[in-house]
Structure formats: structure tokens, C-alpha cells
Image (cartoon, rainbow, N blue to C red; front, side):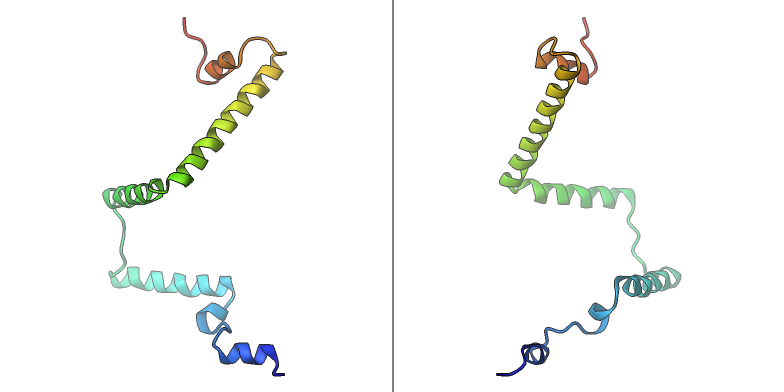
Length: 110
């Protein structure tokens, strides 16, 4: 039987070049590239409008995944419910959980 590590290297699975470097070295090289691009004047710089559009595009892409969005909503609901329960326990069990939620939102305005 051949040695598995030798056969892995022949298939090209070993890290080479940039991928074989540690993260700090990669960052240092990438930083030099970014600095050179800025000095040359060819670096891309986002303006606020372009950044806004990019963020909106990312948000739209994420929101297409309905299961993911449902999980986010469920987690938020669970968090809010546990916070209301904790507030009710802190108050010695007085009042309803709705009152605790209302006070968390800014108080009971009458």
C-alpha cells in the first residue's frame, strides 16, 4: 500500500503559495498591495451611496431565504420572551408579562 500523505500531495491537495502562508504574512502582503493601489490611484473607494446600495443588495439576498428569516424572527421572539420573564421575576412576579414588555419599550404612557 502506498503512503496516503504522498498520494494526497500528488493530487494537488497540499497548500501552496499564498494559501500555505500564515495569516499574518498574508495580511502583510495584502496590505502592501492595497497601499500600492492607493498610491497609484487605481484603488476603489466606496462612496456612501455605493455602500448603501451594496448593503441593500446583501439584505435582499439574505431575506430571500425564508427559513433563515423565520429562524431569526423565532430567536428574537424567544429572547424578548425570556427578557420579559426575567423582568417579571425581578419584580417579584407582579403584573403581567405584557406590562414588562411595555416597560422595556419605554414605559406605560397614560
